[in-house]
Length: 146
Image (cartoon, rainbow, N blue to C red; front, side):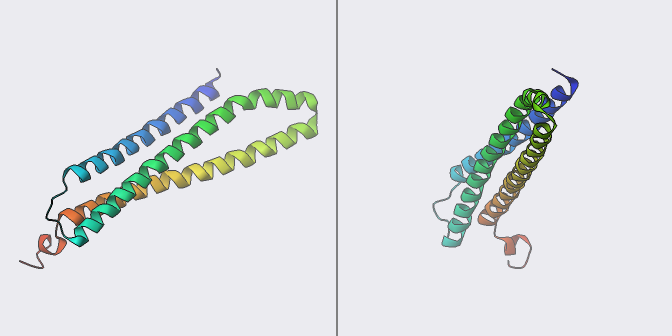
């Protein structure tokens, strides 16, 4: 394995670990929300809690999409050197077409991965805010009401 391949693989592992960490945080948020439900919560608090559970679940599934895209990128990367060698033997036009297709696919996978990763982080943050809003009366905590 070349230094370039090892670097790509190492970067992929870092992204994968970060994604799994966020997925475990979403799972912990779901577990904590369910474990701390009080029987006397109001309708508004129930809706906020339900929304936070939905956001955590969506964050978890966004993480699955990130992992899927990362594996597609690595799988594509491992096949590319073989195809490049074959395209060089087939001729210049074939080689240029393959390079163009590689750039298009890599760009598309990168955009999709960035979208799902951003969505994962945004949803986990929104879920945490909604959980706090369902547990704490903000107006009392800020001193507006006594």
